[in-house]
Structures are given as structure tokens and as C-alpha cells.
Image (cartoon, rainbow over all chains, first blue to last red; front, side):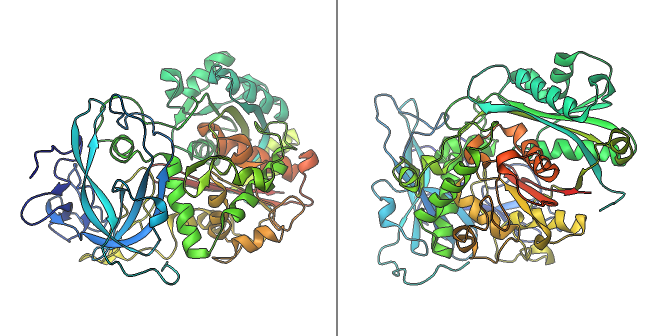
Length: 159
Length: 403
């Protein structure tokens, strides 16, 4: 933590903050290198051909390609937090294929970026995000946002 | 067709779909009685009861086979209850079929019923950060329609699909549903109404996403010999496939927050399969039944959304990748077309009653193959396929054939 905002419930060890920058942390199988995000909480490797039981934290690419996106126009049901005295604000969701790992990770899009600003195939970058719990407490999560000067989407997305 | 590995669909029955909030077991009992009457079999002739579990109806929902048996009157038959999210009904049918093929039972009653609260599905209650289903709601507010929106937008980017294409699926399915007395929504809908309905998860609007419903469906499966003696051996289950995904999963399927990495690790198993998980479902069933997609006369596919129905056309092999819109607009998948899809009206007209839906798909295929589908009848139908997909790596395909 750099700004004192605690990780959202269930996300302990999912990301790092600090001098090396904000990054998601996968679990990396110490035997074969297979990655899991979120990191596995139960020993074992996702690859059925590997008997490894240990994993070590591995920072993931902080940029990737927008695989798809959508938004939430209606308030999701609990346990999605609803801070006291607030109106629901629609927000966008992104599925980003991370550059090096080719792993597609979902995340909320940073506040203020409408779906109209998104295009499948554009470059996205990871950024710290903040949720407010139903008790009004700030919680750290991850967001995606269009990368500055991203390469304009021109052709068909790749399958 | 006569295969030693097929079982007979001796009877089918449903309780109409709706939103009444009454006990699920009442709907299930009605469907069970209807299926037994259709088969001409007495309740006490049933040798095994397989119930599809419902997770939103308390303890009786988790022991659905037992709850139903108690409702119909205990007579000593063993029960099984199973849950596989949206593939629950298929797993129940698979369990019944396996008992019959193993010679452990001749007559099995399979029932799925649900009472569903209004609005978005939500995770089971409590603070459960080790549950991926809880996490996706708590951290992202990623409802089912949010995942569907991602898939629909992806289809638009890859295939050039439009909102109007999606709306045309709803128009088609509403037309079929209007002819089905068991459907919840029985009014035709025009494209303009679909495209003016409220946006839920861009690009999907309210009328492009299936509702959540109450409802029930039941099937009586028997050995072929038993069905022959009853003269109820016309329709057979030729295959049930319910594979899980293979590593690495290339799609971020719900309720998970990420796909697997497609960059290789050090072992040899990390190359993605040539078929996606959803493609693998029907193809596994075709292989088991010894047929190909060209043999399919009609299909019931899990149209959680209009866009997803188009994905299925390609994934079950009705057309080449990218040709689903063409198949739709040619009218091939409408009633009267070359290979009608969702002649029941689909989830679009029924809504989801989770443990019942895969069983309801088999009811529709059975009525069609017997020639009992009334105004929805597909001429000379001999082979049908039903597919679905659910949370947590579940999915299924069932091939139903006529003798």
C-alpha cells in the first residue's frame, strides 16, 4: 500500500503497489511456470500435466489489448457494495488480454470512461482503482483504462 | 437407428413457465405426473428418481430427488440429486441413463423444477471470499448479463454482427414461443421493440437477455426393452456429453475473473485445444452418437442471450464460423427452415428455471420427433440436439433420435 487504502476483501496478494509500480500478481507454478490469476489459494498447478504444489508471486503485464467490454446500467445485487447515501453510477467493464501472458483478465474500467470511448483491439493499461464498501470505506481494486496514445483500432480484431 | 447404448424417452411432461413464486416442488410434481401419464407408467413403477437441485429453495432444493419423492408419496425407490449449474438437467439425465445402461434400473424419472427470485441472479449469501461467484459480484459487480455483454461485443468485433442481427433472433424465438402453451412469454415481438428496450449490459438490451422464471420439466427414461413392451420406444437418447474445459481455457468464462494464460509454460499440455469448450460440447455428443452436424434436423440451444444463440449455430456446426447471421437471415433456423433452432421459443420465451431447462429441451425435442409439437411441428424430424452451458465449467449436449 502506498496511499493507505486496504485491499478489497478477498484480494490480499492479488496486486502490488509501491516503487516498482502497480501490478497484478499471478501465482507462478515453481515447477512449470504456469500462471494463475487470481493466485491459487489451494496448493496445485492449473496444468493437469504438472504435479507442482508451490507457487510464487509473479507480476503480470500492465498493458494489453481490449478483448471485449460491456457496462452495468443497473445496480448489481449484493454483495456488490452500495455506499450509504449514494446513487448507483453505471460503469464499464473490460476484458483485457495481457500482452506477454495472453491471459484475459476482467476489471472495471476507470471512472469517467464511457463504453463509447472503448474499442475492441485498443491498448489498455492497468491502474489502481478504488471501490467504496457498503460501509463507505475505500478499498483498493484494479482498473483498466485506455493507454495514452494507444494505437488506433483500424482493422478486424484477431480471433 | 438401433444402438445398444441408447435409452428410450418413454414420456415427457412440463409445468408451464411463469413467475408465481409458489413452491418449486409443486411445479415439479405436476411435471412428473404429466411425464408418467405420457409414458403410461405408474409412479410406483419408477425404480429411481433423479432430481435436479435448486440452490435457491432451501434444504428441499438440495435434496430435490427426495423432496419430490415425498411429495408424490414414498414408495421406496432410491433417489439421486445433482447440481451442475445450467447443465443440471443434463447431469440428471446422464445419471438416469447410466443406471439404465448399466442394468441397474429399467424405469427412471428425471425432474427439474425451480422457483426463482426476480432480478439478477446473485451469489449464495454470506461473506465468502474463497468463492469465485461471490468475488465477481463483490469486486466487479459482474452479473451474468455483464459476461453475456462481453461475449456479444466480442462477436460484434470479430464477426461484424449488429444489434439488428441480435434483435432478429428475438423476433424469431418470440414467434415460436407464441405457439407454445408452456412458454412464459407468448407474444410476438418486432425488432423495433427489441431495439428500444432498455440497455442492460452494452450491447445487450432487456429483450435480448433471458428472464429468470419458475417452471418444471420431467422425463421418464426406460430401457429399450421396457419401452418396446409399452409401445413407447419411438424416441431415444443417443448421447449425453458433459465434458469440462481443458487447460488452458482461452475464454474468461463465468464466474471466473480471468482466462488461463495462453503463453506456453514448460510442459507439453499447455497448447490450447483445437476446439473451444463450447464447441467441444456438441461435437463430443455427435461423436458418441455416430453422427455429424449435417444429420441434425433441429436444435434447442441455450439462448441466454440473442447473441449467444448465434454463437451456438457455429459452435454446434450448423454453419461455418462467421456465417451465423447469414443462416439466421436466410430463415434456415426459423420454424419452416432447413434446421430450426429453438422451436420451443427457447430461453427467450421461457426464461431460466435452472434445474429444469436442459430437461425441457429434451421434452421439446421429444414432442418434435414424435410429431406431437402442434403448431410448432418440424416436418420429418429424426435427429435433434440440445446444448447448454453454465457456471463453473459446466456444459452439456444431448442427442435425441427417432427410431
